[in-house]
Amino acid sequence: MANIGFLGLGIMGEPMAANLLQGGHQLTVWNRSPVKCDRLVGLGAVRADSPAAVAAACDFTFAMLSDPVAAAAVVFGADGVLQGLGPGHDYIDMSTVDEATSVRIGQAVAGAGARFLEAPVSGTRKPAEDGTLIILAAGDAHLHAEAGPLLALMGKMTVYLGELGHGARMKLVVNAIMGGMMSSFGEGLALAARGGLPADDLLAVLDAGALGNPMFRIKGPLMLAGEFSPAFPLKHMQKDLRLALALGDILGQETPSLAAANGAFADALAAGAGDEDFCAVYRTIRKSGDQ
Image (cartoon, rainbow, N blue to C red; front, side):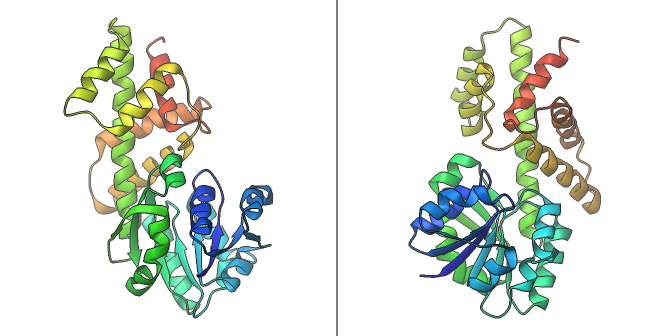
């Protein structure tokens, strides 16, 4: 049994931390809004007053934060993670951030005498609850091996990508593809509706052929019903698309379809859909045809 810390108890972090606790480990938690710790405390977790206190008390501290700014603030801010790290107190960041932020955090963690693993995840709230996320790890190989049983409580598959920064790159590539698929799917549904084609027939045709996939199967009926409760908030998808575009610029890779998808999500964000599910981009696409 390990002493585990978890920072960030949002839509994804709270069920991920619950799976670690239910795996029989001691769990210490922190969240910027302390009330979000309450359910886990009720299950036996301990609430700490700061990220530094979590890191100092735990063998492994995990973080699941909203964006690069939040990830860096938890590490470098007052009473941040760096104040509690050292030999035997390691850090695993599962947030989706850009490569530069991940490398900066990793270097600072190493400077404190601890080990660092980046481990962003592919999946939304339901896989987080079920412990079936796909984990994209990179960084310290020994830490990856030691933390393997803990990662297995949260994910059905872990890919180790070696050099620090490659986990961040892989996550952005995956979400670039997913965002592009959702944008195209929304356009297709809107086009079918404008052409008088039954939406249920379109979904059936897609599912029966090479385009069949779980995202269309799950999200399609919700989109048609106008049900956009967040499993993966749209504002986070738009953030990931923006970071993926920047990665393309850094690597010298043109990404015109990614730019178009980012534009669709940026329009939806501007329309106030940021806290809804990322499939709410469909509503903005439909409305654009009415102008």
